[in-house]
Length: 486
Image 1 (tube, rainbow, N blue to C red):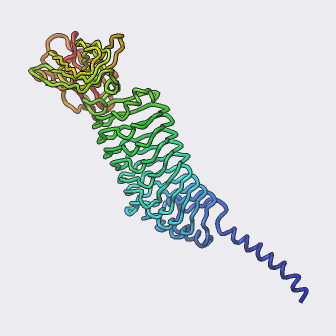
Image 2: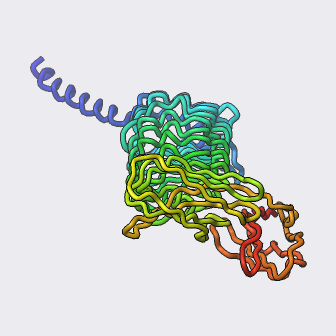
Image 3: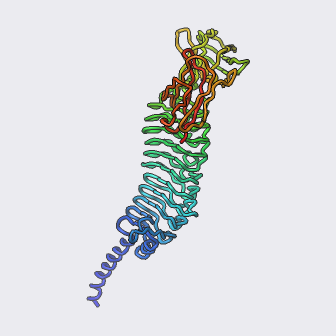
């Protein structure tokens, strides 16, 4: 009996030791790759109580290649249902037979990156199955999911990411709401080629360590969800090729861009007031603005700069109208300080200006003052106007730009075909030496044509929007927009 009692504690301690080893072996020691439905079953069999992956979890149906043939057969992730923590990255990629992410419902945190790419099952419309996920350490990439309509079903993420946010090429994606509590991205943010009408989901994003790209969103009309954004850390703030975007409301609180402001090729963008402070206070290192809404302050950089300039006069309105073949300009000030007067400036393209009149000011006054001027020689096509206000000490400031379209006394100049493919013809009845100058959408001179009786070869030009200026030795006669398509 005494001998048994002496031996028993030894076996008891031994059983605890080996029991501990068994508990530690409930999960694999490193990362896990799931490449078939059988590997989901094998994981469940080998680690039935595993809750934590110490490394990356990769679910990649395209990696199961047998004799050179790719066979996709993952239809359920139920065998992973005990997992709650991934210390590395979580990748779900190329699972064409997977209708949902059900089975990952207990995952609360991903230590580094979340990748959801190239999953094109017809029922893969949401991220239902990631409803417990509230923390991603580094980056979020969601791209090339053909039928994904919403990020709903994923838990509401919060806090700061050390990496990027990349939501691209999901042609049906209309909602990013689960991202709404993310406050910072340490690297780039790219939103491109989805089906978003707004950027709802980025409502609390304050800081971006890299660049911001909102590009090629075919139906976006509103970026006001960016109103919390203050800092873009590197390279560029890029809003481009969004055909239905009408204004930049949402960028009014940006106070730092360590790179360029790039606003281009947004066909309906006519209100850029939200970035005026960026131009006026030189908050970016460079500026590229072009090919936005025709005849608007957003069309060119110089037009926008003039529009955003502040005046020492209280300009309550500045307008133009066509009257009997002339352009009648009128403006009103509510107050003036040391106002010597204003030059009326005119342009055919919004970039190159000439002074056409001087109108005396009223010095310093708090009373309403009305002014007017008649331009008796308007250009055929678009005419741009602005005021250059001059103080008694010679200081100059510019007003915003207005414009009006003048058909001309007769429609004497016609460009065809428009759009053009290989050749462009100019029909006119103008006397004397007349020349055509072709500019690209950024104002670069790309062609000069001295003989307008011959076809213009536009096959040498890339696809895009161009502006053709018809002029003689004395003045610009006409200015028309031409599209080159292949």
